[in-house]
Length: 260
Image (tube, rainbow, N blue to C red; front, side, top):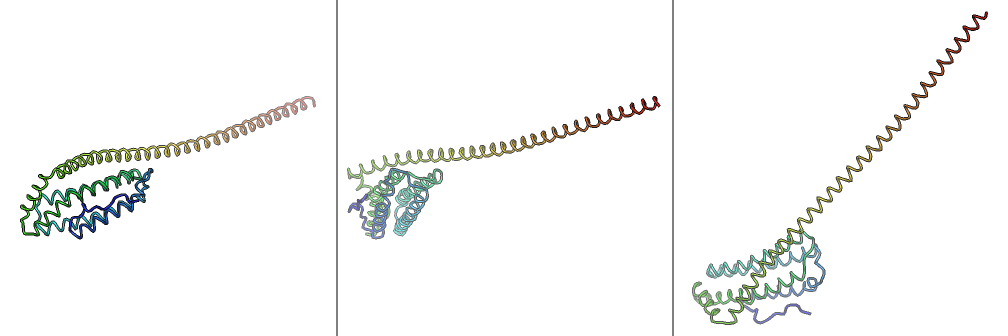
């Protein structure tokens, strides 16, 4: 089942842009089964996926920015387009940090972001870019092209609604990034605390082993000292017994002498 369908409303009329948009839609559909699972996407798979998304998007953004630069499109319009590109890159970078901190990523959150961002980008940002490029190609100045596209948007209720939705999406996206950043920081803090606890436990275990070893050595030395004391006492007893026997012998010899 296709997650994201290609629509004629996505078409800009610029071949390279449309091909790359179709490629991004195909990529999203390819990874949708992986991302739509209830369990988080493991780190290795998440890293590989983020690499593909980053590489493809960077190529696409570079081509769009080259087209705008070559046409001499109004700087303010180029800035808005580049800003949208940077927001996408920052979102992926944030998810990368989330993977680094926790070793996994919420696939369903990533899938919603990709589909929503790409839809808004193709329906609004790139349509504005394409119309301005077409007007410039027809001989209008960059300022005239920007003004005409802006006037057309202001006259369209659909365009106003779309802009409102984009603004709302931007607010939600910023809040989501803030929440993700907080979560990533919390995960990093928990990971660091776990490492500290593990290190402390290791130190305690090492110290316990050291004290146990020292205690065993003290007990052994105490036993050896006890054995030595007992040996000394036996020797003293034997010496005392020998001295007593010698005294008795001398006494007996003296008595015998007196008798004789």
